[in-house]
Amino acid sequence: MPVKSASALFDLTGRLALITGASRGLGYALARGLAEHGATVLMNARDAQRLHAAVSSLREEGLSAHALPFDVTDAAAAEAGVARAESEFGAIDILVNNAGMQHRGPLEQFPVEQWDALMRTNVSSLFYVGKPVAAHMIARGRGKIINIASVQSELARPGIAPYTATKGAVRNLTRGMATDWARYGLQVNAIAPGYFNTELTRALVQDSAFTQWLAARTPAGRWGEPRELVGAAVFLASEASSFVNGHTLYVDGGMTASV
Image (tube, rainbow, N blue to C red; front, side, top):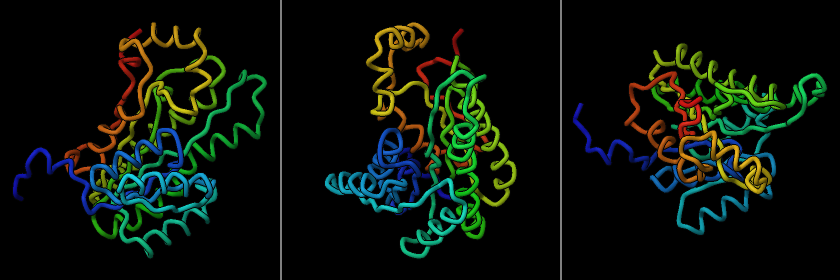
């Protein structure tokens, strides 16, 4: 096998990447970053109007992007969406399971319906989308799956115990997927972001007390910026990570390394 240059190892030209929850926030940043490194991105979300606007935004930058709206919490819809992608756009080389949600509240008062919604969105969706994508990848003998975990895969804060449970499950499901699918040529890993400055965290960013706590708790002393997640995603999506499997890469400014 010829040795590739360092830059070629990270080149995603000709690759097709499906990113769930890609219409805004970190999902949009990841879609943009993969596209900037040469990939054609299939952007998924439930809100078709917001999704098409996000796709148009990337196309205006000269990037290759398409909309693929479906509900990742519906197993039948996810399977149909993957089948449509493979039929209309070609082989999915990279899957980024990014769709997720948060709901805060005391655990002893936490609504059952919100618990169920968190589990469907943050955990079940990885299986609903990952299973049909992996079936195609296994048949081809190659593929990259990146699950989005969190610092809450390791840590907990008051009021988010159910979310913490889901992200712990993402970390271990990533291990399980790698254990089952590595033999077929797939690499399955996770990225665990710390606290990032996005439109979804704007209220926390603007909360001076929380931001002060965050700066004190994080060795880097600040919020992360979405572009700082791209390098990890490109690494795990590219040939550079060909022998990395079942790993969770924390991109958190040192938060999980420090007490």
